[in-house]
Image (cartoon, rainbow, N blue to C red; front, side):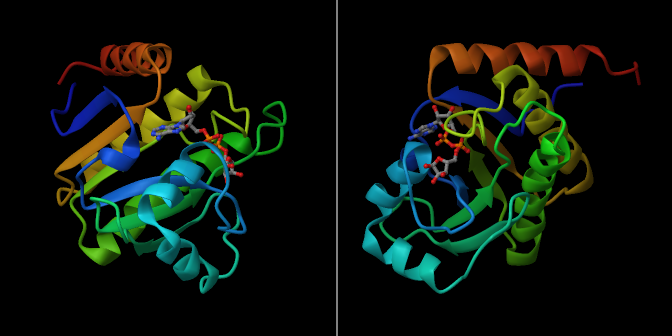
Length: 178
Ligand code: AR6
């Protein structure tokens, strides 16, 4: 079954208006390249200063900060696994990342969120596999958390958007009829 609270778009996550945007961070929460670099550039130096007060964040977990100069008032920094071939617990670590984000949203009373495709850039996670985990976890959260009003996945290329769209169709089609 499809859920109209879930949307897939192509774009730049730093432009998204939502209660929170998710950063694909590293364990040091020290900023970096990719979406992490874009978020820190758009948020301004206050974001790094706040991250420095948080200590380390292990893979699979997440930490929340303010949005500083971003349109979104909160950033949830999630640390995905580095792809090592699939036999090192990557799948459960990636799933745990998404769950950690939704747990923080519940604790902080946040209703809307935008995700990038965590781990599929510098961390090398194959995007088709990552999209199955991401969308499975997002759909499960939408079912169990009625406070969620909108979950947007922001893909950076048409190709990535196409992968996520096809995965979503497959997941929706594989559900048993009501
Ligand atoms: N908006 C949306 N998605 C984006 C944007 C953007 N502005 N910029 C890049 N992407 P990556 P990872 C996409 O490498 O694999 C950093 O250095 C990108 O095309 O940002 O989790 C951190 O500090 C890709 O599809 O994150 C870590 O060290 C996706 O975001 C490491 O990279 C994720 O790619 C984390 O690696």
